[in-house]
Image (cartoon, rainbow, N blue to C red; front, side):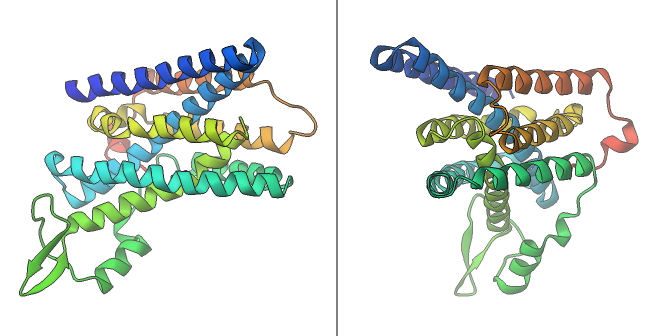
Length: 286
């Protein structure tokens, strides 16, 4: 946990250092007004993506707990999970930017989707999940050759002369699938802050790079932040509303940054001040 804390600080500092360099470069090229605006967009996008990444971490905890994966094997899965998330988000960002350039009305579609997603997140936060009924997991168990036990960090092994997948491969597939689902939710959210693909990609990448360290930092204390899901749901819904009213009122980026930070801080503080009852704490997050 100490190592995870240090790496979390390193990744956060790297994101901050890039933001400072980005402001310095833009200030020299285009002036302070452009630099301030773009740097605020980057900071807001990073904070939104970092907050939504916490929900992703909670789902990872559920997956690893369900498969009883030891921490020493989790590291390799998360490494590939993070790399896969960066690639998938790069593709989605490209497609999102392309859609926005071609169809201006796509903002309203993104906004409606985010409002619906926020409401769904709010309603399902704290609900017990049944990973065993996951359609993807059921399909893989019925169609893919699998070993009964883990084989260290290996995803594929030879068994009776044929290649078979280990349970760790199932874990990797589920981790990548959740990365894709959360990317579909979070990419439209940051496009509400800026339509600049460079800012969208860099804010996403820096938020994701610290995910593995964040996981090991939160793995043992995730239940203490049981109200954070409600805060994230509110942020997603508010971002959706911002996109829906974009032609009526353009919300200043600084206001958005302050709102996101305030909601995150309030939900974390409320979680610590109002601990979850012991009976509810045993339930797995949705």
